[in-house]
Image 1 (cartoon, protein in one colour):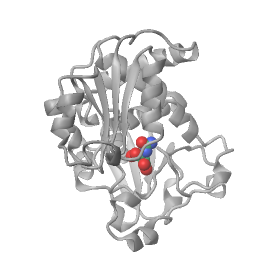
Image 2 (cartoon, protein in one colour):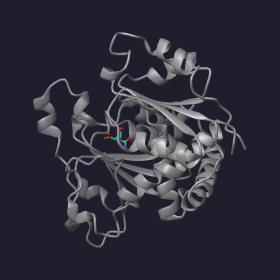
Image 3 (cartoon, helix red, strand yellow):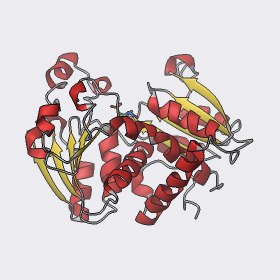
Image 4 (cartoon, protein in one colour):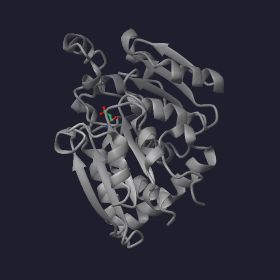
Length: 305
Ligand code: NCD
């Protein structure tokens, strides 16, 4: 079943059926990846445009394309591209869409992916638009939850940290809202609460959510999803320093708890390293899941799966 849209900009575009199809194709891609890959996307080119720092997202997109026999062209950092000279996103995308077959783009401005998609002749995937959305991260998060908990309905997820600027928790909230009876506990300092666009979505969907400021109130969940305070979104460094380590999850807090611990990474101290060896820790596995999920998305958007 092909996806009913050309560009993947936001998880709000997806239906439950789309999400389940992506999970199914991702599972098939995991098998293909474990066998060393395939030639499904031979002759196709991914333009990997990262105008903001990235390690996992860029490398896993590029790995995904290479594992499927395709090729990659890349530009990294605004300072190495014509955006630095003042070129608009529209002009960059107009040109790149004549070079490649599909684009993955990360850009510091919220709404940049929509702007690029209006111009692009080829599928454009939002790989993070400032504090906006990060739909492919949410899909690999969903894949991880689905695999680890054997389903997504009836789960209780606690989201911790920078819920205001953290785009992954916005995209993941919209995605989990497609499933039945998902309950949210939101742990953040008052300054970094979940934005109104997500809160009004919970309310519209009748989703149960509670906002608390104590991490211990959230560890009795199925998933504890930690996030980094997004330093690059702060105008005032002192404010960042004051808020950066309000919530640190350590091994002691997880004693006797069944929750799986997730994090989109990089972690900047929010998860103590003594958690890494616990069976709860799933964040490195989560990062590995980025490859099969992005293989699935590339293949589906190029109508090859
Ligand atoms: C996240 C991002 O870029 O939004 N990282 C990622 O893609 N794995 C989270 C973050 O940078 O804190």
